[in-house]
Image (tube, rainbow, N blue to C red):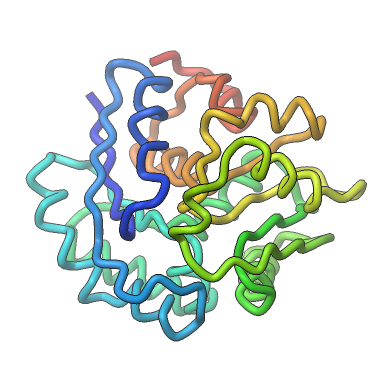
Length: 243
């Protein structure tokens, strides 16, 4: 049994995680602990506070009790707003507190894009434009070429959590660019897991979404690869280990 731990801010699309667990198979356990979101606002100051060491540390003890082997801060905006170096320090502090390997969704996107050999990416962000630009800057710091950024201008995670298949599909289409080798949808408040096969079929290229890459990152930290095609092309990379 591989036990994966996640710190998830508030309540928006956390039901993506049990869905992912079902698709991964019986020997992978997904344990999720909710952290205090503070002010629900896609605003830089609020996002920095949401990912503060104190808020993350508050959830760590509960995760330890689950037997988690690695922990991922399951929040994109609450990590990349600290910048490339600041996000590294955030993860290092989390690893020290938790006593286990740690990462965040922002780094998960960079690592997943590299895994897919997708150097040129397009971003479909639910965030306001200034926050979306910060994510693009983070990706560039990670060595990716961001060829397009689309912003939906949504301020709260609560609103993002109400989006269904039609809105998610429209976001992906609006973000896509002919030069992009993959489309990235960076918000863990967005329900995407059930839509991944349809999105990739529609766009004809890999689609990387926040909750998807977050779980993949935790598997990477535990040296696991799982073949789960319903979770998108990212989960079909060789070598295959069937759960």
